[in-house]
Amino acid sequence: MRMGKFGAELLPSSGTILTHCNAGALATAGYGTALGVIRAAVEGGKRLKVLADETRPFLQGARLTAWELWKDDIDVRVISDNMAGSFMHQGLVDAVIVGADRIAANGDVANKIGTYSVAVLARQHDIPFYVAAPLSTLDLKIPDGSHIPIEQRDPTEVTHIGGTRVVPEGVSVFNPAFDVTPHEFVTAIITDFGVARPPYAESLPALMRKSLP
Image (cartoon, rainbow, N blue to C red; front, side, top):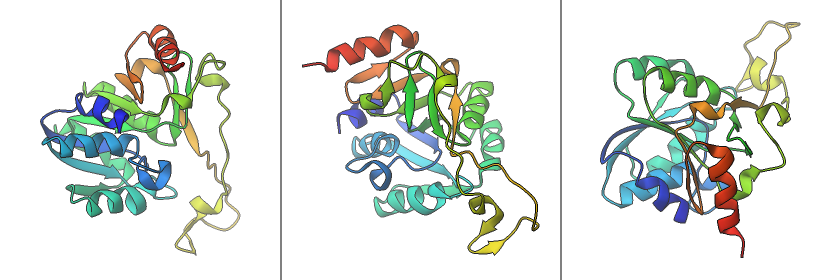
């Protein structure tokens, strides 16, 4: 709830928010992280619409994010991952907010594969790119994103859709679960103890100290 309130202040009073993967109650329990920010903003009276990237190859955006927002009566449309840049170019995205699986001491962020591409597009179109994650996601022992291990998932998530093979037999695939977004592409990191802004090497440890009893 606190993270949602901190983040809601950053979102416009009206407009369209793009998100990638699922960072709601189904993934994080409770109020959610990125979706918690959107929920708090809408509950506070902001008139927001959401574009949910489908999030290939496992489709968490299409299957989970869209369902959560629809159940909350928040206006949501699913788009395929390769549509995000076009929507930004048309001026149809006002802000991006995503979750995080791990955050390095310098503010580099590991999140679902495809997040980096969205961040680069947002930077090109001068759209704020926010990350929402509990402070427990921060690992000050990791200096930067190059030290975050990236899991390789089952290749059938790419080679098959709904049990049907879509990649020719014998063709290999890559299926990394995450990518790393460099800190310079991140406008702000929203946590349960406040909002960190660049330089993250200073603001993130300050929040960590604030969280200590």
